[in-house]
Image (cartoon, rainbow over all chains, first blue to last red; front, side, top):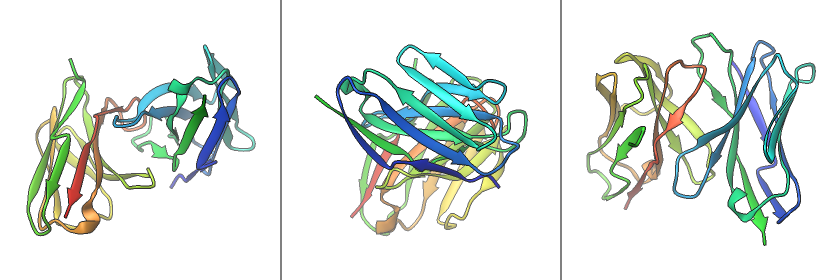
Length: 113
Length: 112
């Protein structure tokens, strides 16, 4: 089955700096890669996703890049703000299959004021 | 309107007790899940139901028993609670297993 590894497990950045979280996946058939943000005391929420037919997707200050050859994808947050502090999870699946999402182990991002 | 709601939000109980957590979704999704999140934040799938039928039952002690009375509800009953069961339990739903999960806000279970 699919295995998703996520790094780093913790990340601290100064407010205004950029943050990058990286994930690798094992199943080359995976073609859908969402990212979830979990704020303190809440459940994970989808913030952005990418499919394997594109290499990059942006939504305001967040972007996700995908390298299918290397089987890795990354979340980029620019101009970080304190409200970006949260746990971020990457995930992978084969869209259209009956297989569930496989989640990474999470990254605790702390934005220091 | 909350899309995926779980109750209770907090649950403190003694070892050996039996407790239930309820989950309801109003999104019309066909698939529902229970996840366990430990202190290291790792999300571990426990169960997956599709249209009231059990699809996935990961390596979970049989003290945990899910029950889906209809496709909008998936409850989790836990017998003979142990200290190691302390965690945050998340219910989630999706239209398909591979896409578009919506999570509830979690139930923090503390076994003392």
